[in-house]
Amino acid sequence: MCTRVWIEGCVSALAVTGILAFIAPPHAAAQVEDPAAAADMRESTTRYYDRGGRARTSLQARTEDRYGGLTTDGLRSKPGLTAEHGKASATAAVKGESDFWIYYADVELFNDDDRDGYFHGMDVLFDADTYFEIADVYAVLYLSYEGGPWNEYAVTETFSVYGATSDDEYVVVTELMSGYPTGSYDLLIELYDTWDGSFVADMGPEDNPELGYLALEDFNRDDPRRGHGHRHGGGAVDWPTAVLLGVVLMAARVRRWNRSRVW
View (cartoon, rainbow, N blue to C red):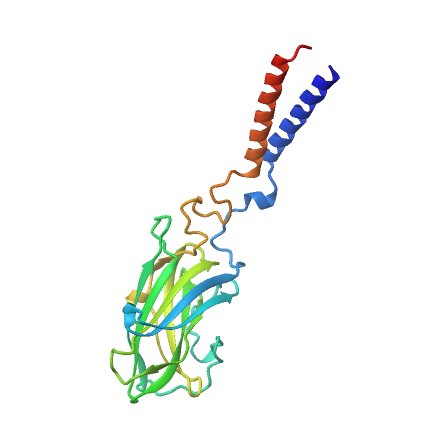
């Protein structure tokens, strides 16, 4: 009799524990994504192609980038002269606006794993031109979330611009891995002269509508196995449900054992 009472007492205690856990799970088990939060570290992987356009015949570099949390509040002014980025801070001088310009740019989005209309991949192509026969430059790319401030996400290697030809199109292919909430983003491309780091040209959504209203989210949010808007959990059963399931199975096993035992 003592054995039976002890077993039934354990089952009752486990059942109460499971119910309480289900009603009041720990905070960490119930975290839900806040799209406005900017505390997450931003991570992305980027490939840079300096020849061949979208044929991608010449991979110049590949980087894995980490930046601070996405800035969402404040005025959206172009970084320009005050920018501090992966190369060096821009100098106080600005080249004549007629010396360099970005002739054309467009964006193709890819990778929408959960098919919700938001993508975690961007293929950015732009054609920079100059009046010089040849000039070495680099570009800094920024994203703006829902009209907020510009956030740097990629810095190219040095590449050469050959006059005003279209043979020097540059391609930046990025996959956003984490830290980018689901929403509408704008894109800004800034061009800098490698010789002295001076800002020479830019192109944003005000200049080219192709760079505005990009439906993006990071890889962690673009997962068909997860409910949209949750950061963790995958397709797994949460732990309170697992506890209750275990209690039910144990209780059923005890009942079967009681029916087969002569007391």
